[in-house]
Image (tube, rainbow, N blue to C red; front, top):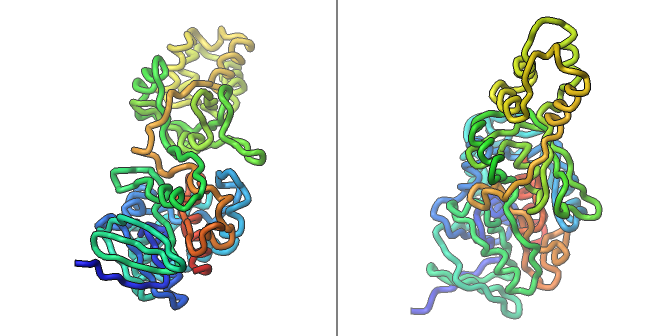
Length: 408
């Protein structure tokens, strides 16, 4: 039997954050919209985000918080739909929220509330939502895109690809969006895991195992080594936040942030005490008198296990009173600038997002439509625009989705 063909104005492939929001916004504009996803249960990446509470935006969002081969590409979309505008949707839905730190907004209760908000928006806008539908073929005729699936065939003059990147494959992530882009002749900036823990070999791996579970406020930047991940106008910044030792290496917000800028062959430089001058603090402690062991004094400035391990590793022994200014300065330098070479990362298995994607040079920055293929749009994580940790990637999902919805 021939597959029955259903006709729509817009088809959105991918029912995650960007896809659902775009479908709802296009539906509100009177478009007949179909949103399809290969997963039976949609919104899984939303569900696990923010520790289950979804860091749904960041009120301080600006273009500098994103990595791309073209740093200016995201400006238009971000201006077109602000964090405050998405927050107003959250408030209207009576979802309780709070600001955690640095402008990061979270649900008070559950990330599922954000998925419910998006699905409700689709329902109210008359969007047809089909889950568990795997796309087998995408083709374009003179004026229509033809989508074939095991569950039927669909056509529409406008097609939006919102399938995300490769991060967290156990939740269904694939490279589908990249394949569609390449099918239509669009360039792909090499995808790689981002916002991901870094792994180590040798004695640093053993050190991390020994200290597994220890967390410290740290400042991290890319150190010496291979060429850095940067454009002419984007240099890797320094990130100050929590650093966590794990059985495989280093994690925590500061490490996840720097992972987007790190490249194989480069080092990372860690300051274990960005808030206090170790040398000055130890000199002050020494001046206070008493027979205090150096290691004991250091535990007053760093987490105890870390202070003990560094003291043993570096051979920092004896009473603080016997330490010269020069020796204190050398120890402080090692603490403020601990430079190590990661062996790699934990990969897409634990990466929160995918760096790279559909080349922005191929897209219209105002509408996210492919310049060479009328009616074809790419939004969200599949595009070469990757945000920092802290709600920025969700804001890109909303902004890019809104921009495309106004274009379809």
